[in-house]
Length: 118
Image (cartoon, rainbow, N blue to C red; front, side, top):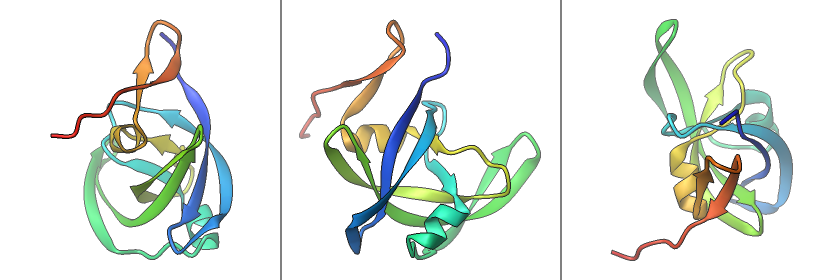
């Protein structure tokens, strides 16, 4: 299986009708989504905290905020990391679950999944 890229809409939860589209890499190994800092700032996304993350360069601290992510007719609240310079846009597993999708590795696409109410 190769990489899966999709286009998602991103909006501020306070103004869901104003959204921007961004091409993201779907990464089931990432918990949270990473979006370009410039995009989040244009949309007026508030920084609600900081989190530490371990990457190839060691431990880094990044701001996080809440966005509404839109895909294939669905929308949901997603915690996003303010991506640093050159950071690729990533859709993490919590966004996939929030929107009700899973990765179909055979076809290299996303598929809707039935969500559990437990």
